[in-house]
Image (cartoon, rainbow, N blue to C red; front, side, top):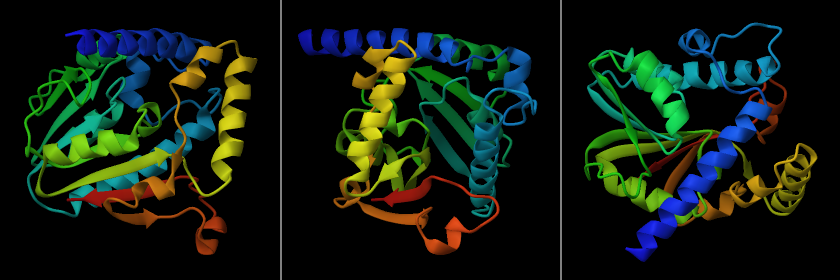
Length: 243
């Protein structure tokens, strides 16, 4: 019981800091804006960032469509639900979005929850009562950096997969060697500069080395020379993990 209370306290602290940060960064959207995401006005502060999200989401959704079979999908860290909603438009899919950010999750419910094949759950992937062996695809889209242990969260996700299911990681920075130290320093400086020093304790820099104990494959590596020179540069790895 004590351990559960400590976990909930940490989740509540993260939610409070994270929501305040997103307000400060102008990343809280109206219901009308959420419906249109990833499309957003060209004069919006984070327009270029959304171009990247549009590219990655379209590529991932096309990947799912090519499977041409019924899919039960879980998005871990779904936020306001825009991507979960996009995936629910794929034929023969059932999509569940889960998040600990109650404010954004309630907005997702308000905007999207009328769809029969789309549902939202409050909680952490470890403690929400999700059914083991139920999901064909589990997606971490720009969320894995907020879990303190990559090993723990991936192992928890693996238990939720079907026998031939897949975990996909997109829109998440992965670093090599000493890059991670420089990235950590930049993150600390950024949060201090905007007055949210405490957020550095909730943001974790992922190393490619952390994947070695898993059955993983890199579907896209931004470090490859051929990818560096593409006109539509995508700065993140796309990683798939299987049982």
